[in-house]
Image (cartoon, one colour):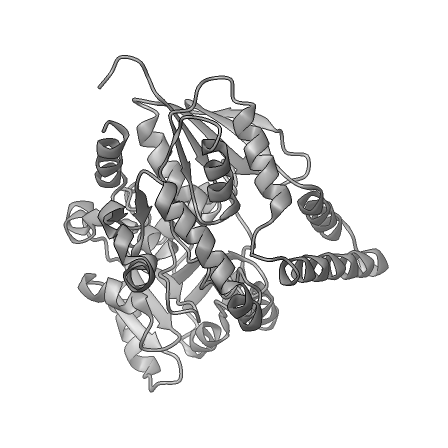
Length: 418
């Protein structure tokens, strides 16, 4: 490799210290590439008073926001700090802001936040060193648009790393009607991305979509997986008490990843089987409700940092996985679960859930499909049998090497040096 270190800029959503799912994935890549490249990460603020610039490891971090996002963050902070009538008022304000955001998307020609896109472009322009490569992602897609517009004026290569779908994303487009309305315009943005990028790294969520709609670009498209397969510290079983602890970490969504069925199962189990939820999001209201009714059975720890969530997974006996209603994608947390070598109890929305296929070769898993027959006794039997399971990482790596960050980085380096 040349002695002159090239400059790579990642553009993504939330990053250090409060990572989004995509932030974790690309963070694992950045942590390896920083050995040979100068790394800058342009990310989105997730707190109003968060510093605009920071240094993490050997990475320069630039944080951006918009007036609309600032208002959202301020309101959220006031909701947390308020009680009674004040909290009620702030909750109403939050709903009004959400409604404004909804109609802004509905009445735009595509599903792009122009203000955010401009902030990303401005951040790129303010980087003093010449940029050699930009690695944007599809969540938010504004990062890709910003990179492409910057490329129009600068000699730079674009290598997107895409996870969630864009034009076919129900959640991003707010509703099915809007998705259909914006589909052609959003697909034009996807085509532009594919045409003007040096190459594309994508996960299995995109495989069928690319084959069906953009097969002419497959020669420059490289399929990998969520780069989350990382060797953890030794398992720390029974760190809580004498109970068997089933641990869930991550976001819960009332519409997309609803925990109600999983909670029903948990409550039916013997009293020494306890659920620990390190969770947040609109679906967390169901956890809190059951925690209030069954405080010794369902424990709501709320939102925690990435480090705390990782520790919680290691401390638990069994990891609880809840599949998405949208069966076109695999939750990134599945790979974090697999990395631990612990037993996984997966609750699937239906038999088309792609996580079922992913876990097929994982030796310590049980699949329960919602609305299909299940035997609570068999579930308990699985839990008790596997409460101390610890699959060696070397065995996991052989099965899921395609999600191993060093493996993916080698593929990426081959594109960075061509």
